[in-house]
Amino acid sequence: MLRLALALLLAPIPAGAATCRYTDFEGASYTVCEVTLADDLRLFHSGPGGTYGSFRAVNQALEAEGATLGFAMNAGMYHRDLDPVGLYVEEGVEKTRLVTREGPGNFGLLPNGVFCWGERFRVIESRAFKAEGPACRFATQSGPMLVVEGVLHPRFLPTSDSRYIRNGVGVSADGQRAVFAISEDAVNFHSFARLFRDKLELSDALYFDGNISRLYAPELRRHDAGFPMGPIVGTVVPKG
Image (cartoon, rainbow, N blue to C red; front, side, top):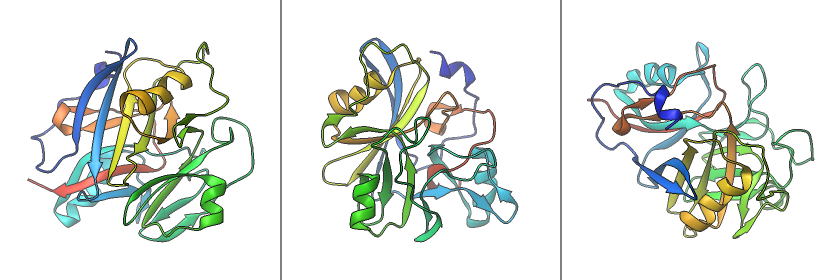
């Protein structure tokens, strides 16, 4: 599979790592990682030394806690300086503001949305998020929405030839599970959205990014490398 060619052999798998697996949907291959509220899921962007930019840098920062990443992936679009494009909340503190206007690129292809968690996991359309103002321990905004209450984004075309490696997140109806997926093959938006709705049976899902999409999954001996990233989402587990 295309992305697996970039995988690196890692150290022993940490206990409590997210449950990751391979799956296929309509001729394309994907890696899917599932997280529950019992897991310590966090967002990472920067520390005393500046923007992390990589899974390795996050792991180095976690060493002070005697911890490591159990699973991680890039978690939203970012500017050239690696700052988040839209809303970014870390440990209840808003670092960058919500953006609700239509704009260029995938982020501005409304409706876009926010992945938010605290007492439960939620994927919320951005303007609905603004109206509601939910409390989030962590939140990252991206776009477009893939699935909104069981309905695909209206601009997605099944015959689109815009195909990339893509990644995103969907949440269960009860808010107890967050399911992350990354394609191993280049897919279009319509196919990727239907993965969440029809294969994973999730009624709300959000696109993170494409082309630069990367995954850290020790249980699969996988550590994708590449250009520096902005926001990163991952579980934290005890080291060793």
